[in-house]
Image (cartoon, rainbow, N blue to C red; front, side, top):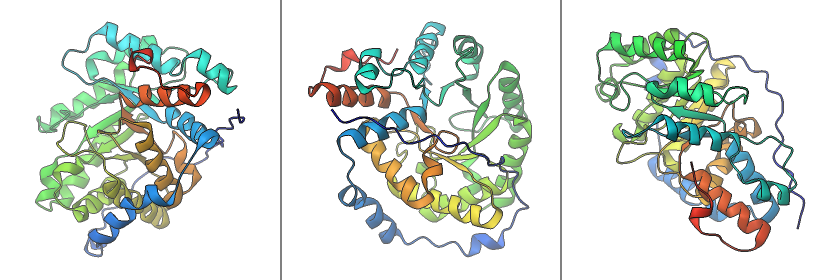
Length: 328
């Protein structure tokens, strides 16, 4: 078997995104060529192929970028504790040993939960270095009273969340009220304090890719540390065309300001072959820095199980049953 050499984890030295003044004139110049975007996305897997040891290395890197998530109405403390245990050791020891990776301390990028489960997750992850992310601001609709949404952020940070996934008011995008959107996200950013803010755009609700591009730019101007596609509750969640539009806005924002902003696709990414396409697009469009967990996260729950299954196939030559790779 070929030796596995995962993508390197270079030391990153970028500052948090401090945001900028609202520049509405930049929105007027935004254009999206829908056919070109769809063509670029549809041909990606045909032009790039990652096989064997290289694929195993990319999948190991993907694990370190997963926000392992449970956002269900029937979540319990026991479920969250089991999820945190999986985040600490996402791949079975026998598979890691066969890959020669047992000493590399591979974990997921974060564990993402509702506010009520933050303290449970913080306790279960103590000493691991894995941050707790909390969904906030009236997730998933984002339509609760504004003052309550701000208080919810403050309460989640006080409970120990190091990352806050906020939901924007999609109505501001649909009505072109960019000032309101900017003010909203800027207020949320201030409420986060030292916690990193991921702005969920709800791209499946925004109707056009041009709206997606504009919302992405406004979120970054307002100080978002990450822009994120979806809550996972919309009828359409993360897609490659949406991803291409959002990460090109990240590139434009970096060229404007020098700030690096992270990207998080979420919802509907459940199999290993799909995440490889996202990783390839990130590398081609933004570079290797955006393959690291401080700039790339994947909102997922079932994806990790399929990655583990693919890695077992790599080391044994056989596909195992799903129940051999439980998520909790």
